[in-house]
Image (cartoon, rainbow over all chains, first blue to last red; front, side, top):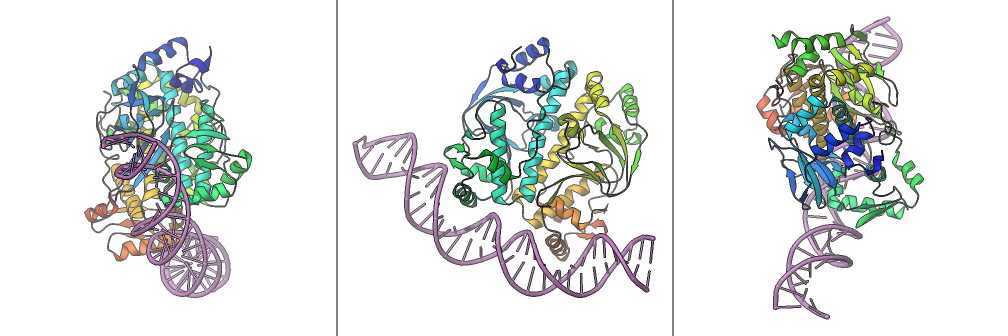
Length: 245
Length: 245
DNA sequence: CGAATCGTTGAGGTCGCTCAATCATAGTGG
DNA sequence: CCACTATGATTGAGCGACCTCAACGATTCG
């Protein structure tokens, strides 16, 4: 079976669990007719109860959290094939909002569907746990970056990681990939002010490490940027052989 | 059945899934005879492959990550009942080290046991997913704090959360709880230098918000500290009714 | 009692912030 | 086709939070 021909979610889970035909069709039934969400819209708001999870079919999303003083922290950026909001379903109250960065096409998975999946499809459930864990590894990397990397290295590291993620799903290469993130969103992601991020991006450009233009990231020398960013984790690439047959 | 009499893990999962007797005994069989780990020892080192997960029976642990420049970021602090390292099992390579903050008593859960659990015990598996999600909510809160809270609020917030976690497992109250964390560890947790953290703790003490002494945290006015910390999430307390019967 | 570890304090530097203004870019209605 | 507007990007100046270096107390333990 051609993995690449599968819908994004089956393709992602298939990287971890060797899915059977019945499981693939189960996943297909699970994903209702996709819904279009315009850029800037919140799919789930902070504190909302009784919401669902969403599988991204196309477009970019993000999870974020607001603070009392008006500050905003983007927790993660979600790409096609990613599932947003599984954690919130299980915790029942959303601890963060989910938002469409670009126009989005998503499939909704209700809480009931998710619980049923766990009762009936333990292998898919394991795949879901893996997907959640993999996304948490990204959050951890993010945490480490914000806690212990300066703005320059933090930004470089994030953009390398983003490029790798896009490469994995066939939407670009680390050397050159589309990136619809506004500087303000990237700043809220990296825990920087938009103004300082702008200076950081200029510095990276002047150092010949990368160019972040409207809608596109270009990396002239991937090895050099990777080296600079201290990007040594293989949490993204090392896992692409199923462990469950 | 008296939930409080169960071993820590069953007690924790039982908060989410109404465990059946057979499931409880399954969990008990799963947890081998606990092993003692002396304070300061690493249970799992960064990059290690073929490691296991560990259920804490007693003591405090933490997950951390080192950076090329010698910096250290503590990702989360683990208390009795917490499971450390589930994510690393699924990702196969540990993206962080696990360490004993105090002397520790832990039960080891091998990868094979975990996979078998998912094949045979979907309800427990769902509980595990919930536990992972709940711990991820802590990491997210941590990320938000480091990204968007200043040192004073960040420290206050973390110590309120820690008090609540201990209160939930009956090891203290928010007003007064034992805390074996050294200032250096707390600093690595909060993304601060040990020196600055020391000044922050002095400030909090002088403001009458909390006293962090060797081994113990005392909060004179919980409501005031909670207010100061901007602690409004209920991700810890809102979930203590099983959703799966 | 010595040694090691941990905590505390001072002085000075820097990274990243805020405030404020100017410059693109793109869409919009006349 | 062109003001006009809205949004986003860029730059400067000044400030403050947090860091580093260095030294000195306090506590614990063999």
